[in-house]
Length: 412
Image (cartoon, rainbow, N blue to C red; front, side):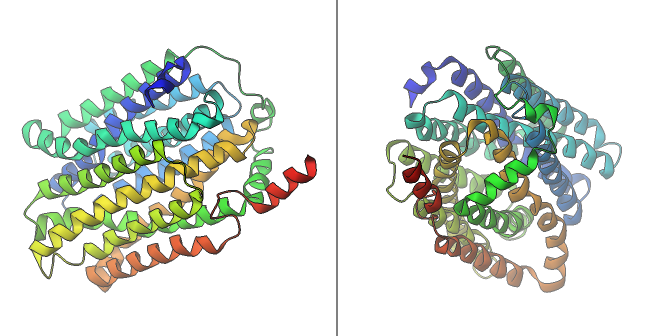
């Protein structure tokens, strides 16, 4: 993996991504603790986290319009600057109103949605195909190494200096990410000049490209369920389980650290191993996250056993999500033409994250109406079923549509 950093464009983009990852590792925990202490209600937490995801989706939509029509350098710089400025503004917003906090976090989410698609497209553009899985693994590894200690560090910083100073630090990290992206070598815009002249009209072309790959459609469906149910429900319930059943905020940081540790292990393995059936590894890995909601039902019955099972489930969930992400990103970079790659990545993030705000907003009400245990059980089972069910789609085992392979043979 270190040899890939000899590529100057990838190296600078990776450094920007890593600075962004450092901020990302601190923000959710600091934001959650600050909200619980200043507003108390779980519905406030759901609204703010939902605002971040809504912003991410809006950013993915905007990224789908601009990512293939402008230099990656410009898109990455602006996206990180927007995030940093919005997080700095959120500190002042806490003293104004919950609505002001939601607005600031929504803007930060917009910057995040733009950045993610542009970065993945840049990797596909500047890294040769044989090295892309290692480049994706290195991106994951650096990000997850930060996330291993980030949640615990955020909880400790919060206890030492408070929420305002912690959030200010994350904003400055994102501004640093923007400064690094600004140093990327200047280059011509990607080949799709039509993406700049007629962005919305030509978005239909990207929709046709997405529909052409059945494995891609199946993966998006699985990601929607994972984010709206598996990931969303743990964001809302883990702080409550940690505080009410497992002794305090520190356990939440440890659990999220275990999640990132599992992701690090998966990144190291995927950097050295290219599976013969990458889709099988990917979808089985994604299903592991269904264990997280299931494990969160145990602490109310047996706190000691529950604590162990929750940490194990988070570790396996981290292994599984990167066993999915790395082959998934590599498949898109391999199968999609460069002039549509940025928009397809943005479409991926837009659709997969588009339903998640509904989960974050509605799940607190479901938890209140039906009870925590039934909701967690349902979310865990549905996450497992959606991920494993995707393997029934033709092409899912290889992350390559059989129709495309046959067409290649015809073209030859």
